[in-house]
Image (cartoon, rainbow, N blue to C red; front, side, top):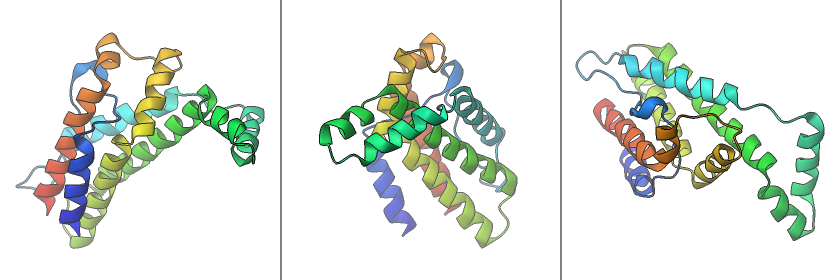
Length: 180
């Protein structure tokens, strides 16, 4: 089953849809093959994505309610306009980045992989992160937030979102292979 997930994510990597890496360096969770202990990059990755998620403001309650109403509308045009709005992009990007943050913190807290359960736990979270990072909507929404100055990134990060996503997700897949 893990092999299937690995092959499945390799397919999505080729499309390289969504990722943000600060300072033009590839950061991805990885483990030392010999000791099965997390590399320092695990904590750095967690901090970067948690900081990015925290930098995106929550929607005001009235805007959030408006978006929910529009998404439930029977009028296809209203639903489409809601899904194309900057508010939708902001909500969805924040939710996805919060999910990456939560999973990466869980990996940091596991520490050394010394049981089958801890190994499965880490692999599940790594695959979840890879799946979330390769989500086409995250990439599109994140680009829209960058264009509208809702997310502040340096010039190199803005110009290389897809490239660094691919590299980071490739490293995650390599880590999953090492752990299997």
